[in-house]
Length: 367
Image (cartoon, rainbow, N blue to C red):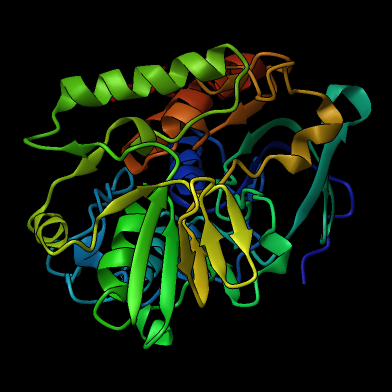
């Protein structure tokens, strides 16, 4: 069991998913020595970041764009499309940690980051206190599932669950299921559940947008720019996926043709027996599955007062505008696998400038 006991380091990385491991790689590449100069903390029981908690039926072949970590490709031969993505990515991350000598302290929960002595940040964890000159927060969103509230929700006699608690389609056999949410998870749940369920109903707050044709660099940059503008203004970030639309794959085309992806407008209230609209329509249900996304897990940063009036943390590149010692990687525009890689590099470059000439052995990192 770790016991940090007030130990002082240059950098603490919180989170060991794609964003955290990318940051640790770039720290090591530019002369920061693991365990001496920086430590990596993760509250999960093993390697794999949020991927290790994904449902078993989400096979690697269904994943939309898993980008390799810097310095080590995810070999195509090892990434069997039929294997659960949780197994593929967890194995890949474990080998990555081993190859680059990244020791991840786990499971360690970070409860708060606050002002410490001598201009350092005080990182309070379940394994004791760390003092650090800079912090990379790479905590993602999986720990903060978003569940909206609708009138009557507490009266529903059936089962309600979020994507975070979804384990696969067979548990819905013979049941009437309402799926809420227009993102990739919602459509995947529907396509999996429909063959087993007695009925499915798909409701979304706004009409889904399906994307045809290739999604190239130009479209990707435009999507990231939209998210980036929000965090520059101190607004809560939207996911990059939310502005790219849903890819119109062969499976999605079939589901549309078969009526599985027959979108209905958002209901107005939940009833004991299902959901209802103000116009009088009602749908009876045994299960409401909320595929309504996640929010950034940044509660540990609350003591630093980084939030703006708009509810978000204003970020330039990865640096929190209110505190240049704090970097958010995998937040807003970098909340994608390729974005997290680039953001890890940007954060390390900025931290090296912040800490001064003591860590200038290799010049600025470039792509």
